[in-house]
Image 1 (cartoon, rainbow, N blue to C red):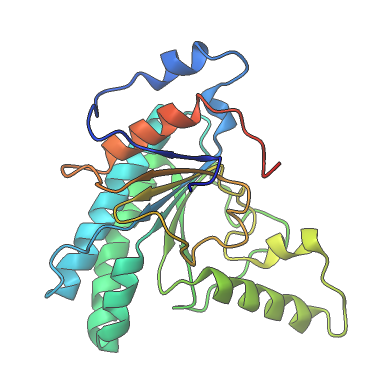
Image 2 (image 1 turned 60 degrees about the vertical axis):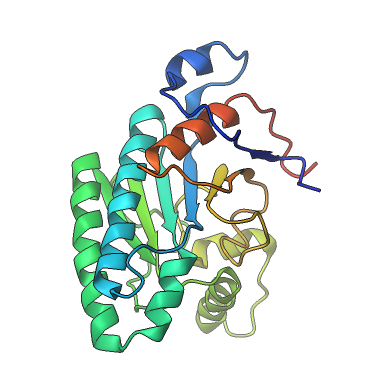
Length: 246
């Protein structure tokens, strides 16, 4: 049985949706209620035999999805792209090959972020990042494009707790204090997590941040572009009454 806050996409009927008009037609619901959209690309990576092309294709899809999301939801503050399939490919690649592929892919996302007036943030254990001041946004930009690489939600929680206790030896970590030490520090928790491709099953992504997110799933992602999935997911989100796990 699917969770109460989960909605599967219909088999067909993808089309252009006027999100602003739809939002106005739903009492008490506006597009600004959606601050953070996370896209989990569960489809099989393209060009699996060529790591560079696979990562590049994933980043191009991420850029398309981010442009669509920020375009149809003016109040959107953050867009996250997670691709577990690409992570598995990178795990099997040699370090030089993986590094080159990710560097090239990063350029694609950096260009998209600049075009959108957003800051690009890398999340995951693959690099040492300069940490933002706890509880403060990492950048002055009103928008953030987050790219998750070599990522595990459970590992993120462990790393966040480690950061906290390294700064507060012998301290006590309360529930509300962990957010400031996560990879997503300063970014709102996802309001909507979009799963595109594959079965809807437990995945080790956004384990902490996605606790009360709405879930939207399609087993067959849009073949031409993930932008269609973004439109469908946002349109469905705007028709829901959020219960935050209650």
